Image (cartoon, rainbow, N blue to C red):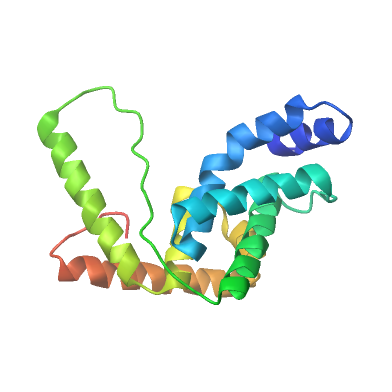
Length: 184
């Protein structure tokens, strides 16, 4: 049982600190994921709040078939789709790459890194929306293919194909900018 699942179980048993831990651990990633659907960080924040509100008030059952994160992101995804249906808009936005911990501060390396992030963001915003979503879940949220399949309501084989095609599409966009990225 992962941390989110145990926190949720504790919340269901009456420990309010469980929901606090869930919000603390999953809020930022959920907002960034939802932003891929609505292309507005403020709306994504509202949908994330609504997602947490839903699990607090309705207390849906977590069956532990997958990870807690997958379950939570699926609820958020469904709420984002409902929002899109209500507003009749489908938009995309670049993913904000969160810089990892860096022990050394080297201005030149930092500048180059920032420039690379900008190029990757631009390229991600130009590829197919579904491709950017699958790449976000795979590389920024560290979900495996099975978990991504659950969140996006596709089978594992479709996800594998999407990841391959998304990488090729992103690589093509990066090539247009004259940018080589080792991870593709």
